Image (cartoon, chains in turn green, yellow, brown, blue):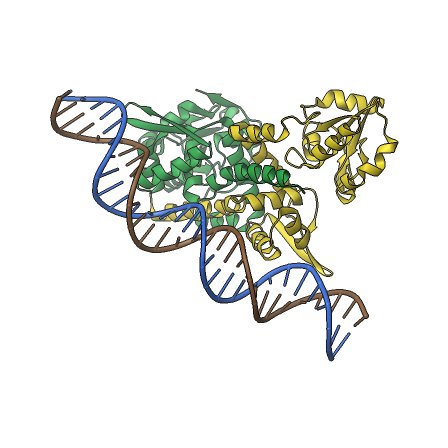
Length: 222
Length: 222
DNA sequence: AAAGTATTCAATTATTTTATTGAATACTTT
DNA sequence: AAAGTATTCAATAAAATAATTGAATACTTT
């Protein structure tokens, strides 16, 4: 096939594999998923992923080498962010591919959610209609900064930590849906459990803001 | 965050990383790209990628473990194929992400193509208009089986190996575009070089059939 | 300027992945 | 049934990656 051609191909696929290497470790994928919600310091990332700081820093270097993540010093901390909107889209594609191809994905979710109530698939059209009509209420249970960055139109920011305090403002007659960072973030699951225990009609919306937007529903950018 | 939650996340990201591992090796990416054009035997794959058969077989096992590739014994050979249309789409996304994020991609291509003529970006709309009008001709220089699987509407199958024989049927007055498996396949580059040497007005279309289809142009399935 | 703190670097060890080789397996053809 | 061939398995060595620790760096605050 020609030596030059071989060298060319090897070089190109070498480059493509940089991105593959970036997403070949579970911890790096978790870091990326967190960053898809907004910027974070190395310290925050380490805490959220159960990594030591040195270890998180090392993984972040791999992600920077793959040009998936950018970071800069801001005051005392180094803050990291996804390098591009495209990276977030690509991660969503990866998730969709995995859900389609890897039967284990669904099994793991089912095992985790079994016996938990209110975790059934929610139909977006119905939910959005009810939120608009005011017959259902939609809570964004992520930290407030993430809500400020972008959130589902019509949703209320009630970070999980403040949910208990917020409950008096909610009615037990109304349907309440909670969402967070997506199907593998557990904030909404926890929120629904808390509300169900206290007798609220709570449901979980699996979607992230980006999923919701991809389905054609409206999103508010901060 | 709760032990159960941590275990859940670790399991999910472990699964996602299976796909990441699949695409973390240059050779596996090359195998996948070949398979995106249609099924192949292990032997053919090994030959096209410059791998030993045992080595190719091992990489293919990794790809099967990631559920990206499926294979079955057909007569004397094991034939492999992409497990799903989604896999091909995902690979295209990866390529697009790499082209956007990794400056090296363009540099490597430019270095490879430098001093080669007829490799400039071709505008799809103009090309398609000319092909329709008959003022330009479009050659598919891949092996005929790939053409039969799917090809750009209006294109003619002239596998690279048969190009020399086919040249008498072509006019030096007409514009001739050649395409193959995509921007990192060198068949069209070689075809254009051959034709240019003999005085034909040849150009290269970088797109694969799938790229062409994604841009909204018509494709014929076999 | 000194002290304090967040982050990265460097070195080590453990683990995983890759390439290579030869043997084993499974199917075809004769 | 025997011979032939394509593919995979198994074992090994080489290479790359991951986690851990302590030291070094760079910025802030006092």
